[in-house]
Length: 247
Image 1 (cartoon, rainbow, N blue to C red):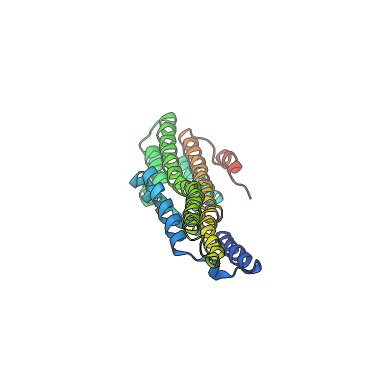
Image 2: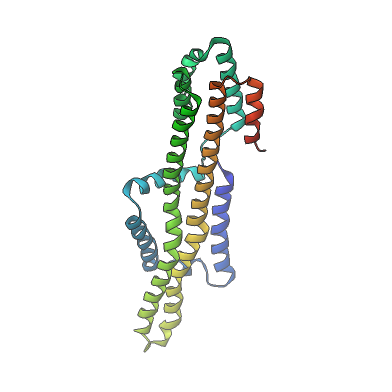
């Protein structure tokens, strides 16, 4: 569980709700069904027009990463790569066949299988680099779904505010309703700007950072597998990959 994401969302809610109370508006002033419909459905509609179905669904599947990011442990992976290197030196590359069969990570299993098949190091690099690049590109498209929401939500908030003011202008003959009507009109702006800056854009940026972190992890693994294919000393491999570990 990424506790910072949970704390961040809670602090955002406290900031908006607490600010409304401190300003004397009260929590009830923040609720307006029409504004909610305009901003939420409008933002969703604009995003669906932009994104392909597969990309949109992939973005939704990535959303839980904000609270439960993929497990990435570079230090542990380095230890495993060194262990594989020792097996290869003692038993040859064919000794990694059983390791490949038991490996759960598809990327690592593919790399190990390439080693077992005796694939040339440069070919291993080409194949695995293609996998890393294609996966990263698709994952970034999924993250940009939320980035798009962060772009469209404030604009829909302005649309909601304008529509609310239009309704107010139609009731100028009733001064008692003007204040409440104008306040309600601007609730849509609050929804749009708050959702974009407290939710959609932070989620998009966090997902993009996680995607880059996983790509970096896979690049490290790829370099380790290539080093095994080239017959490098396990200690040299460990030193070579040590630069990928930070903190």
